[in-house]
Image (cartoon, rainbow, N blue to C red; front, side, top):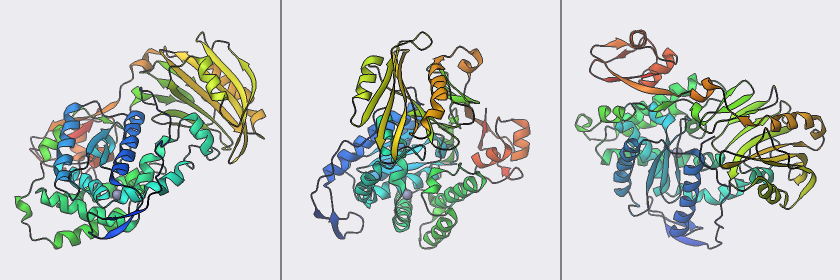
Length: 477
Ligand SMILES: [Zn+2]
């Protein structure tokens, strides 16, 4: 959970039913266009605000300005120079990059950490710029809207209840990433072209795909980088990049990699999950920045997402979600929740939870996936009102009643000093004075992550690979 408020999920813009014909800026072909450019921009910007709020930006203005400057320079040289382009680094450990319609582009700190130079960054930004200039992201809008109601956390979570809980927005980036294979190849073509036009050493596109391949094959189940789960196989992309490289006459020895200026911007960047945004110790969720804790039932599968922390029962027939919808008093927030169409209200209570003002109620609701029943609670704490939503299928709900009660009553101030003081791992730079294998480097400058992770962060595949004298090497501490 990010410390800032999470907005309610949902796209407020209605898709206008205007069907027209427009020229595709990249292909020059006339094609059916469902929305105007101004609508495209409006929609993208609305999503972008939501992405920035729910996930949060890396709090490093020098890094943000650096990425923005590179992206803007390339975008303004593209086929759509006049869009209101924006480039942001998200405070997200996932290896990901995506484009929203109208030119809002995001890269995560997770993907930046694995990059070695500015040229690699340029090819990724160029790829995302390509999705916008070739209008792939516009073509996704209606499909995205159809899918909007299908996003969810647990398998029983219906769109309606997800919307009620305000936790559906995580799927946005993924939605916009799911272009077809042809669109991805075209975006790679464009990324290559834009990077080369900006005098970057486009061999970096190859090393970028090799890195993604390494990270992907090392990642266990559930750790697949997002950019890979939605993009073609990196090996195919390496082969296609080799064809692109064979087809150019540019002398690449005169192009730029900009390794040092790039890597120096990564010094101090958080690596992996940031415990300041909450972390689990068994079933207990601790949030140091917001100074609260919350217990999920034993054996539940839990996940800390940007706008909510959620748990799903082993049978996937029950779930609990904690989020921060706003600052309204618990009474008012409860009344608003229960006032929603289709909700049947049961017993309500205004007893405090561990001394904090609270309001809670049993409820039933009819959803697309059947009847559900559960308990909703709002607690005022630290200037915010927390929403604790626990529900299950109508059949399973009686069996979870005690577990729901216990979880809701577990919400409390975090007082554990070690948990409050917990700090994230960060990337730190070391200037190498001689050649070192990753193994040697790791012995001399130990990291809090595995040797393999250190190798990957430095753009090589194994501990026996060599890091060159004179370069900045990355460690994690
Ligand atoms: Zn793509």
